[in-house]
Every structure is written in structure tokens, then in C-alpha cells.
Amino acid sequence: MKQLLPVTIAALVAVPLVAVAQTTTRTTQSVEKSLFERRAEKVKQHPNFLQQATAEQKLRDLRRRWDKAFELKDADTQASFFAVDGIFIAGGSQPFEGREAYRDSLLRVFQRPNILLTHKPTKVEVSSSVDMAYELGSWKETWNEPDGLTTLIANCNWV
Image (cartoon, rainbow, N blue to C red; front, side):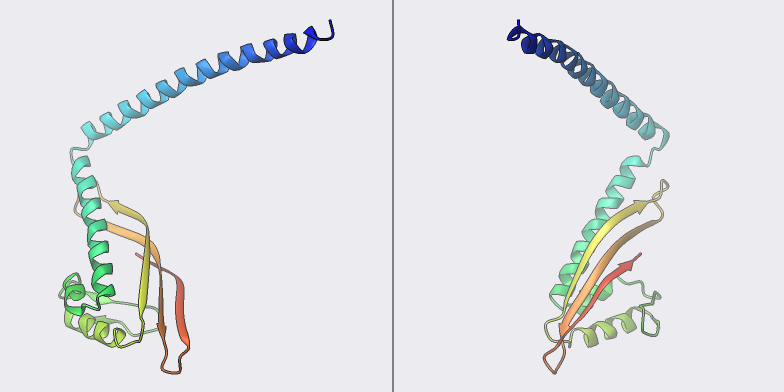
């Protein structure tokens, strides 16, 4: 009888676990169907939903192109992303206005030896009317000073 007791207990434990697994599978399928139905309803309610997804992807692609232009030290390409009458405000420096001023600042930045800029986008939002979008993220920048020391600006955020 002592040998049967563990088997009996194991059988009693196994049966409820199988029932829980079957219930969980059905619940998961219900949740997935429910999420799909809600998403479909959202698309019906917001005809610009697909345009939003496309705009978000375009914004992410622009970020990659901007990063590549920085990596190549291509001030002209990078400045082409900046509005003709835009105002650039960076911590620790005076704001400047216009695409040409932005391009000139890039030319100065690119003079820094071994400059490296790394972006990590964390969120891209596009309005339901697809007329406004923004990107949030963090960045860090490093370069070598003339005396050989490395300067690091890290844990910065942007909008």
C-alpha cells in the first residue's frame, strides 16, 4: 500500500493540471480571438490606422538614414532632414535657427576625432489623423579630445 500511495497522489495531481492546461489553451484562444476582433474594430473605427503604421515605419526609416548620414559625416544629407526654418535646441548650448545653421554646426561637430553617435529609439507615435508624429529615445555621443582623452555624453533623451 505504501507504493501505491505516491502513484495515487500523482494521479490526483496530474488530472487537475491537464484540466488547467486545456482551460488555459481555450482561454488563450479566446483572448487571441478577442484581441483580433478588437484590432479589427479599431481599424474600422480609424480608417487611418494603416496610414499610421506606414507613417511610423517611414519615421523609423528616416531615423536610420539620419544615423547613417552622421556615421558618414555627411552634413548636407543630415541637414536635409532639418526644416528650413527649424530651431535646434541642445542642452548646454545656444539655440540656432535654420537649416544652414544646423548644417554649419554639424560641420563643426564632425571635426571632433573619432566622433560616434548612438541612438536608441524607444517609442514612435503617429496621430490618428496622421498629421503629426514624434519619436522618443536616448542617445550617447563620444569623441577624442586633442589631448587623447575621450569625451562621453551619455544617457541623454530626445523628442
